[in-house]
Image (cartoon, rainbow, N blue to C red; front, side, top):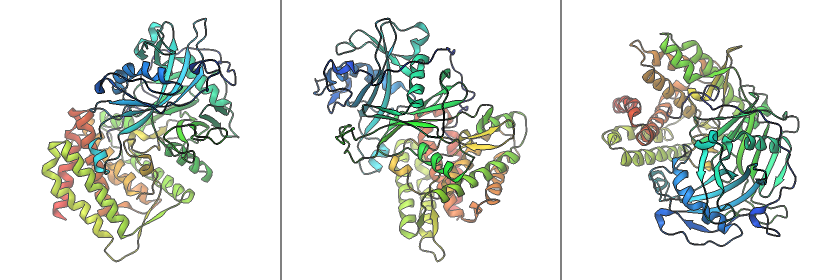
Length: 534
């Protein structure tokens, strides 16, 4: 359960500033292009990073901007928690779009520049396992621009560009600045379009003005800000064409009346089609789907996440079966609502064989990267072979549907007032391609993710002898079965997904938290032994 962390209600954050709503001229000028220039737009040129040699001058309306930022971003980007390409050099950038959301004022007010850019890197082991998928992740950046950076924003510093339209100015992570974070909320309050950026709000939702923001400081794959303890804005950092599941699925659930998931209030996206239908984002055809950039949802104030609650229970010497049972019921309710709201699919022999082959590929890629996994490869493959063989057995086909995709205790919130569980963060595993995360999948994948999470909590909380994790796992499945089918009735499907999740955890911990590697390796040892017995 590597992505579990203290919830966004409990993460440390810096001091808050109170401010008046920011007035927004509409349309905003675009000084980046100069007077009479083409306005907000893209730069379809690659600029090498430091590791590739001396930057060359790209073509395009924002060529000088990109060239001036390359040395700064080459150093800054890999240090960000949400950067997906850690451990591989950045060899160049392609600027997809640059949009000025707020110009810097002569009186010292900060400016805000929105960037979409590809970071070019050698392919990872996962890329190679997917038949050489290009290592060109597209990232969303928000640059604050000012003459002098206030001391309290020093941790957000990116650097001072040399040359280009920002020559001699200071750039920094804009979301850390309450004045600029306020601007994003104002844009979402009033739907409209600026360059390739389109801001949308649900018609029956009114977002109050002047909500004080605070940045959440301990997320890993995205960035979030809370406004007035009323709304939370999640900014997706690694983006691509297609609606993000964290927007798509909660909206679909809201249409069914499911109250287990906060419904989106507003969102913004980058549209490949310009106002006249002309291409607005180079490298993407105008017919491509928009890129989801951020989602505003109700903030569940006064709630605590399941990870923290589980650790608190362990610290107090308490069990977790009642909460696990209720969480199992909540998960099953969400699965049923998703199956009602969105198309489902059949898992016949070809689909099961394809599913097993993907798991086997991920195992090989992980074993290549983590030597400790190699002695278990043969035994773990038996679990995937058994999954593939299910399609050759007589019996009804299994079903696949849209699921959470990255379910663990940190993605579940329990409100203090009524003890009700809600699920959040439907983005899926961010390391997987967006198209893959949007495919129907077996619900066993979500169940397996939560079962692994109980094991993680028991290990981190140093559970005493007595089977704390085993009891929580059983209670979760019991709660799920009270609403839906019992996932334990399909043991080979569940075991294969739990094995796949443990393999993912091994690779994650080896890269990011080596001290935690024994936690998933203990599961690998258990699952390999079980597969060898079957």
